[in-house]
Length: 590
Image 1 (cartoon, one colour):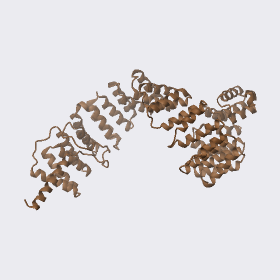
Image 2: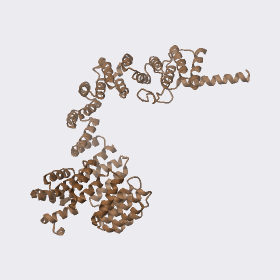
Image 3: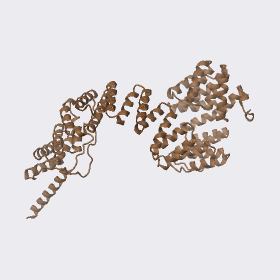
Image 4: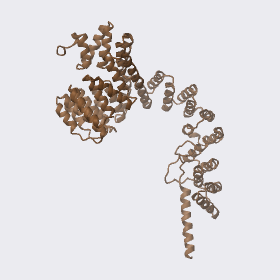
């Protein structure tokens, strides 16, 4: 053999090796194809089908395979597809059909891809991958009705798995633009399988997407009638009912759970819907059941802990926070911060410092350091608290501003208003457009009766951040509280309310300005709404004062008396009671 012949032989062997590898490789449907972008086949080493055809690799077949690969490398996909498709037709080899399908799909040759996939599926009828590709191609037919006979055949091939296959088919159809055509197709395909729960659920989903709510509910109920334990159907029906009302969905879920108490996915959705409806106590009870069933589930433990914190059940919150921490919750810093707050609320200050001090970095670090210094201040260690904040080296301007804000807040709480004002002012020299610094200095300026600074700063804040609801509110409330420019104050507060319609403090401001404007009945209505949202001492002080002025003094006294127990040092509350009902105050506060 000459060297030239040896080179040609080596080249042929290399080409044959490459061809055999390419024939054996799996197909991966590209995401850019026009059909729903579903990765229907995993990449990796293929598993050869069980029954390969007994076809000898003749010179003619080898030539066609080589022609196809070379054409593909040269950017001639149509030639490549035709070559491989001819081999697939002749050999019925599923590996060749698979490769032909891949080539045709990439070249967007829909007809050829469908033929190749059909050969692949028939040559290897047990291949789930082949069925997936076939379905993906069929649902890309235009018009969609043309796919019906092929899909009917596709479903009939594997009747034992018609339920899962129908669910998969519905997912593929879900992104098709013509939802009405999808519904018509799904209903037609479903007729022979009306006794299969997953099929009825698929019709329900298609009806939902086509905005046929009545049919959607009818079909989901039928699915549950066939298979009551099908939780996905329960969840779907709940979602459909929510479109009408949350109350109806809650009643349905509650009834289902009475009959199927171990349906934990349903219970989880029931609990979440209760939270949406602000039924925190009921939601917590459901989450407690879920935690008992899965004691090592960190997310569930964390959810129960947060609900317990909202209801001020510190013992339960601590228990579940520690469980979440032990279970490896992803946000351990939030747990440490929450445990620190619990200890702080209990006046266990050394314990609180331990938890806050355990947060050494991350996005919660600065907040933890602010809390740490706040605890030191509660222990009477004002200088130590300030030194702690000053000892921290900020990593960027944002952290530097946070540290200044925290220190200014310490000074404010110790009634050193002038020092806080000066500290913020000095920092503003280097960051004149810091919204946070401008706002904080405005709040302290009010304490120093520097209304000019307050107004200037807040107007600058809304120039920089037009959706800053609290800046509008703070300026409007300050004017209302001082009984000045009341029409302007009301407009500012109403603007704030547009931006944050459920904010209790802004609703309180609206009630207060209405009171100042002599609209007492409207004021009481708004203040009651604010107090229902948040039982805050400032809000309660305002509500009580307006009720007092309206002659409803017993109710006012009760509100104040209850708030004094929870917030005995609140300035607004103490000042209001001292003016109107000093007998309520303890001797030390008079």
